[in-house]
Length: 94
Image (cartoon, rainbow, N blue to C red):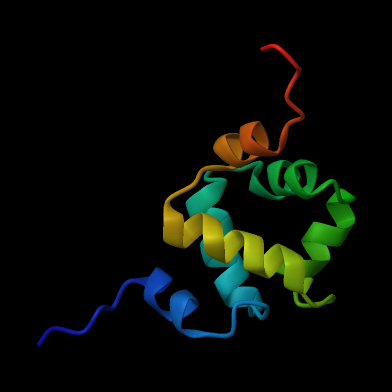
């Protein structure tokens, strides 16, 4: 039987509320590819850019709620734009 060696495989095996900085980097690359990934992640989580940079650089722990949401997004194949649409308030009658 072949073992799953993808970087995302290790993310699925840990506690849903915990994420290491290296796992966080893997998720950033997957969900927000490109040079402005930290900026886009900061906007998504409504956090200061410096805060997300500190998560990435191991200076602050990744909040459990952010870790859980990113795990759900990865395991379910949800992109940040999709999650934002689901979270947006719906207008009555629309």
